[in-house]
Image (cartoon, rainbow, N blue to C red):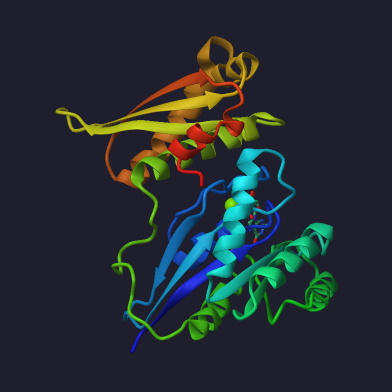
Length: 297
Ligand SMILES: Nc1nc2c(ncn2[C@@H]2O[C@H](COP(=O)(O)OP(=O)(O)OP(=O)(O)O)[C@@H](O)[C@H]2O)c(=O)[nH]1
Ligand SMILES: [Mg+2]
């Protein structure tokens, strides 16, 4: 009998949850950036054993922090629901920063929502730590009562990821595989492509812009000349943000477009014609119907 189950990721913004999901799955299912709150939607990454012996469905969740608006409120509720339904919880800490009130808040949240599933703690970014710092980080993780087991890892370099994966598979209950072996994510392709575009926006913007931008893919169509045409809107919340995104003489949006097109071509394994438009919708983060349409629930 095979093993299969669900693993929910919890952790503060920017600790490396999405990087870890990509490393465990072995494919880029979630976008990564050094801006906090990169992940807005729950993304499922699927890791399957080469021999079909096990499957883990990892839910990459937004980093938890105090809700500020409808967007962050929705994100937090989703995290709570997902953790409650998981067969194991993967609690990610940033080893470089030690444990703070944000981590303790999440520990309490896990404790409250999850009476049964084991909590595996990944102390991440150990590539940045000296030996004595690593020992201190692991000891601090051990102080968290909710944590059952601790794994030092570097999600970016892959250190410790195999050991962590092995342990997680042991924790999966017996059951049939739920996704075909070659499938790595459950995201509809419009949303996956929109995320890849947003990742390029995040890399090139600062301060409030990363939080203010959302991307919506309107169409993905193969053309007669063999190119795939992707049309997308980049939503800003104000005219001044739009100006920054467009840049002087359109330079910024061209740079974003070129980088995003390369990412889409890699993903689709085809030449892409990308048509990006920057548009303004005030307060989209508080607009429940838009959030629904963007698939943020
Ligand atoms: N040095 C180092 N950096 C890492 C490691 N893992 C992730 N990072 C970096 O940390 C930053 C945040 O990574 P993400 O994977 O986007 O973090 P996240 O926890 O998903 O963040 P949110 O989606 O905002 O909650 C990125 O710049 C990553 O490249 C690691 O093992 N070592
Ligand atoms: Mg993330």
